[in-house]
Image (cartoon, rainbow, N blue to C red):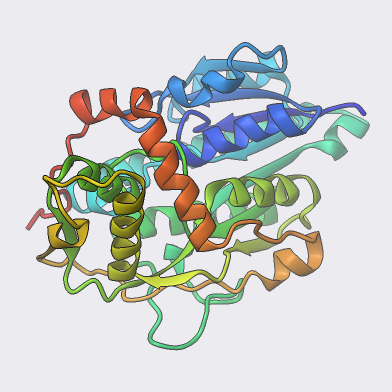
Length: 354
């Protein structure tokens, strides 16, 4: 089977690296990872495929128009999977301009390069080209106790991060409707799993609990998130990228709604099971409720029936099995996270800008 040439932007990040590893391991496709290696991007996340003949890497910032155009000309992709983004809500509260710069201007720069490249393609090659933009359910805003987000839900972003991703989504749709660029979009619920940078809830609390440090929980931990194991998400993204209907959007979630406090307690129980420590004692005693995040959305939940129905995708991991795998992975891969913990991010509170 003749493989595609897939350009993955942000491919050294959490979700992007999962996609790149899956492309190499599970498909005949060739992948070029483009990443500017900001604080959350790590080539160590790509070590499992780094020596493969169908993998290559190029350091590139999507805001650099000349570099992006050169990338298209050299690699000649027939599929772009766009995952490069600033993603942490707390950091967007501290510095919103960086999110507008990367997520909006960067996406627009990439779209312009893709459009120019696609217009020069001929016949079958032109018909084969696709641009897949990967986004978040946070563009829809916050839910109350009931209901779920569908692809028809109105946009109501509440954080600077969500606003930047909503704007990027709109630019992608505009390039499709204005210029005919063949695009497909997806919006996902909260991801977790191996290789996630330790500023996010699950890895942060795994590492804090392992080290016997306090486990900070915003507010009373009542906020609800819909959790998706990253490898299940990567499989969905490949299906959407290759087979999704052009111009359409697909929501991806696993119907794993959990209150934050319940997630924290599950992590504590797994750590106590896997690596009990008499000095630390029961990890639940480390839980500390802290001032809530400004504008903290109450609840997210995804209706993923469209991607299930049209593309035959279904998650393989329950939240229980996925979280167990995740905790065990962090315990077994100190060589991946310890340098980040020591030199890049030590677990300090973010998102407290007044």
